Image 1 (cartoon, helix red, strand yellow):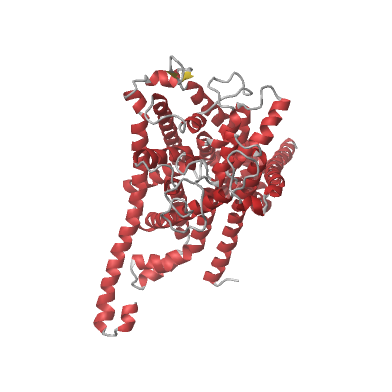
Image 2: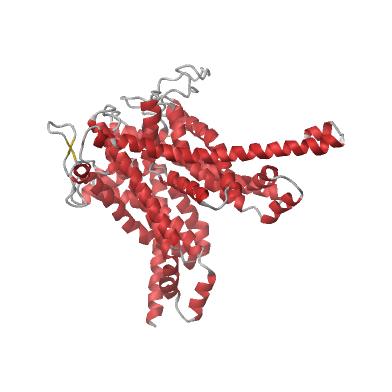
Length: 295
Length: 308
């Protein structure tokens, strides 16, 4: 009898905890969207931010966030995928492999501000480039690689053994098997992982403060020459991203409409993360269905 | 393959493709090995560069390391400049442990809910909820902390709102999904025979959870907590926005405080490269790196003790 009552109480507690988590998420989303969405107008998205007057937008920050994301993924995806292939297919159990695993674990658990410091030290202090997009992208690459490696390794390990063995039994070499059997099968998993990682990169700020900087030069969106100073495509220019912008308007407090700008920017950021999440799930399942001819 | 279809002699089809394949194999191997080497190089480079830079305040500026770590007087710009970072170490440890203390029972509770109580609801609702919580950027957590939590604390609790307490609450929310995700994996990977055996002996579900499942999963559950702590310890911006950033050891949890990460974040941009203050900030960066090493060692130790 007694133990039955404690069992009931415990079950009640677990339900409460689950309810707390759901309530927490609902509150956070409600708060962000209810306060932020009214701010997100076409004008807000397409006008330049202002450094001390009210009414600034987030055009450049939004572009910078996307641009840094693209560059980061261009560097990270090949590195991470091939690194994952190495870990899944080539690494033999032993000291070296366990050392590489430690390295990956370490990169994964580095505080992002430490990654930012490393970027500051190498790109700004040692190489004297100043705050640049490429510096920011490489800093983001550092903690994005472990994610891509893990995702790829898991995806490749989830390929049925028979598939791989059948390919090898036909006399196909290992690399060719990886290229034509393993990677295509693992592709949906890798894609899903990459999109989720993109969401993380998009919201990252601490690693970018001192690598991509807190300012953006005035940009001319008509200028597509990647070497020009005012070209948005120039990778050697400073670039404040959306997440960094939220932090800097709150910390520096120079504009009168901090709340409005930060609310709007948070809403855009969270919506972007939501879109990444939904896209990852949807694309993953669609491609999986296509490749496996399932219904 | 293209080659084989153009020319059809047996030599071309058999020998040349074989050679091509062999070269392909070598190139592929080189490619993936390079990527592995880059990962090692990045790790080693980070360690070496940050260590070299972080040790300068001890070897170039002759600050005594013990005094640096234990002195409570941080006054880098005053006349008698003093570089004691104990208050920040204390702040970092305080927010880390306190937030883990709150997040651990909640996170493990949610994990048990998902794996034992209601797997269906867990998978359909709680799982996506947690994934979305992970996805919310840390500056957004900080911003909400700043505009909601800080005024709330100011109105209903002692102090001016910016406080250790606010930092702990923000971090708790941030590490909760981390702890939950890993703890859920741990609970789900337990063999079903454990549950069935215990239930067959007449134990209730709660008895099974408490006496069988939690002890069996304990090392993995601790790993979940440690990884949550690592995240809390390294978080910079969200904490910085709500903690107040003062240089004294807080007298209560409603006092303002600062952590290693917040001081580094705030000051590294304003100090000149090579100055003593700047070097002491790099030393804090090195301490952050060392402590994140320690977290990994703890995780490794725990995963070595995994029973199931």
